[in-house]
Length: 282
Image (tube, rainbow, N blue to C red):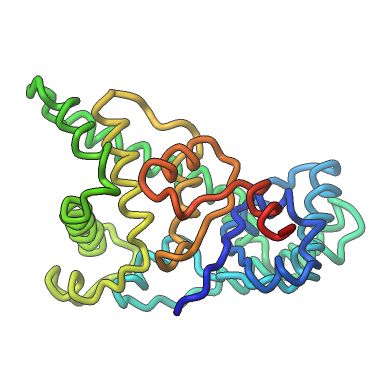
């Protein structure tokens, strides 16, 4: 039987940083490289250096289990496409330099002296680039969408409102999304050249991203159908769902958008930080 694990995304990790020394937290929770990236990327002055150094020091000292893949890497690995990258190790090294630094200026100097300036620059623009790419892709899909069917909204609502009670429909939607994301790996602008057919990619999919796929499918469909633009960091926030590796993993988040989507589609896979603390008090 797979053990139930609680994933601490960035905000919940920050909120619970002082409690990471507790055995029940360390035994039952994990976080991700994405959360560490977000903490580091917010350092831009002396004040943020003090705050985030304190948080990340507690995270590193705790030795909490950490998934060291970025979401983009997970999108490849789910289809058995292996990629090699120095980014995870370099980001962890930057975190180590933060802990050793005596000031914001000293932190920046240590990054340069350690030949990590390229990876620091990557961190500084990572969220903006991910968000920008998603918005551009979203605009293209919205501009080409056929809004002529008067039953679009009723059909959409009927399709998604009772999805948890309709496993066959959920499976059909999921299969469509598995194919869609497999196709993105075969595009000419894909970062990794994939020498597999679409059929082989789909067959190799390991279902580790099912929760993310269903959630991003609903989010994107809602925004397109109702002609709403995604808010800043929406896609980045949803990327935390790539770390829910199986049906028993639970994301711990206070983000309103994430909670709304998860309560609708995956109500058993979402808790607030208060909910988690209540569980461990019992």
